[in-house]
Length: 220
Image 1 (spheres, rainbow, N blue to C red):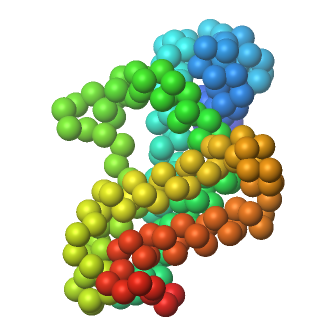
Image 2: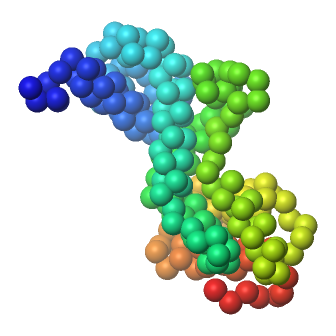
């Protein structure tokens, strides 16, 4: 029997179709404007199927956020980092984060939406209900290990905490991508071109490496 015709596979396909449609709709209309009717039509399904698989609109939005973090985590896990070369590996991490934001604009929009709602949905995720639970990032751990290795090799200075370096990488990438259209108007130049984004990516790499380096500049 073709596995795609089994009840379990059809169930997975239907749920995945709704999840993908909801991601597009919530990214376009926000949480408040992303009605179940819009999602049903985008998924070529019916509202009752959303209730069956996700319980409610909020349950569906939480599932979208979980899936968003899961997919980024899986992409992070595929990074090829050489612990023997912490400078090049840290550069790889920085470029990955910025390029992921660029390639997945829905990630930025959905994060903005959840922040507009003061992060009220994520705590209701099954992954975050237990005390101390959160959405771990493989990259956060990678940054910590690379900083330690770089310090052991005398390349990175003592001081900057892994969390702060990680936030620096996220912030510099996130702000640029999420605000590139208004920045283009404000600065009078197109910030959405490949060239402009490439220049900013290089600037962020240089800035982070200067921050952690024992010298003013690291060759990489």
